[in-house]
Length: 186
Image (cartoon, rainbow, N blue to C red; front, side):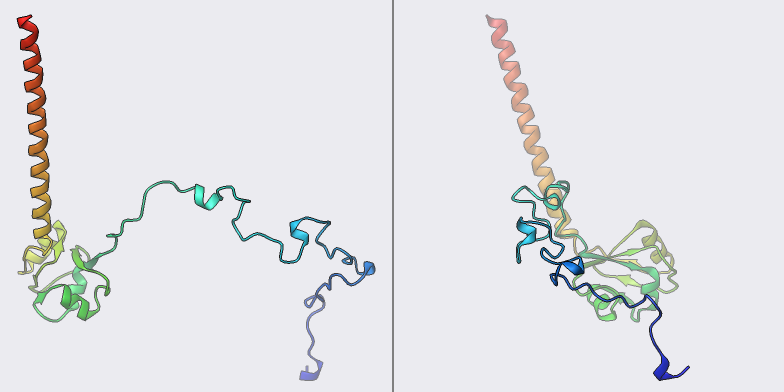
């Protein structure tokens, strides 16, 4: 075998069809486009997914749920990641610096995955029950996450709502009892 004798295998290179080159070619005149209509004209075809003004399938189908803008802001951190990190105090900034959590993550939560064999103090980072137990067993401690202020706000708001609901319920009962008394007098 020599370079000058190399050629492609028989049938592997098929000549492209040249359309609109006479009736003898089999693709003359209408060039495989058929007769008339939008699809036969040059430049005459709608964009993908367009259904003539009808609401297209991709827009009318998934009418369920939504994507939360808060999703993915809290990154998961394994115990093994904490083991590899240097330093005894770990906070979100330290996790960013070590490249353990992505830049866009605002917070972090430690999960029970891997082993932790040294004492670590978590500042403003949450932890699952199992991870909390493992950290405390290794001699570490967890200071309340920074989200505690926000959760306090939420608790306060819920308490106010509950109080308002009780007030409305009490008003409703009072109105019923007044109506019942008025009915007895008659």
